Image 1: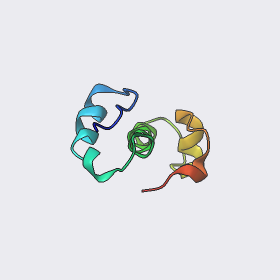
Image 2: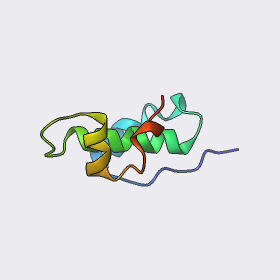
Image 3: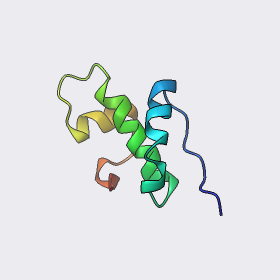
Length: 66
């Protein structure tokens, strides 16, 4: 069964993260992985998980698991 696709983000981030797709057992974890990359290049001053989660609208920063 083919994994569900993650929601697209920024093109170059999606292309970069695609190399790591097979490391994630479900699309939600992979989607969070891509969203974290978006957060790392965002304008948020402190690059903490709660701060990034708020900027990229990850529902619950406690969900972040790898």
